[in-house]
Length: 198
Image (cartoon, rainbow, N blue to C red; front, side, top):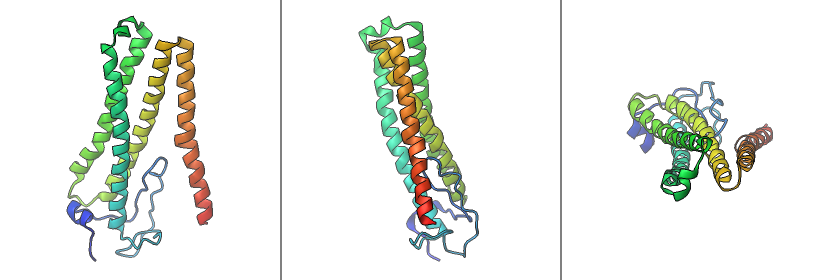
């Protein structure tokens, strides 16, 4: 059985089961054994287990790159605030909120890099299925934290520019929007897609 370039490079061999990438898909691990050299629940791609795991890993890396770009923009914006003339006018609540957002942004960066570090630690151990599964978990947690930073940053800006109630409203609206777009909508699409497959 031939292995793709990615699998040969990593030296990993999948075990029965793979985890799909994306929010809420990590738990959908296929556990039924498949014939040697084929992927469980083949979707017509004709992939082996190793090929599917390699593809899932590459897709997850792409998701992490997108998130990293977004959080870098947010972090850069937050880091410039102390150098603004009005920063000294912030009250204690605003300063605490700002510091929490900076810490969250730094933690998100650490989470994104932890997936790369996990790959390095597991490199050559032939456990790509575990790498894909745990990277999916990291992505889920990171997405949740990015939502908090987005809502918190918008709330802080409204708090400074308009008023404290406006900041609270902005934070609440952004949180609800994030939950609808990142949780409710994808789950609804997934449910509909599963029904169509049946």
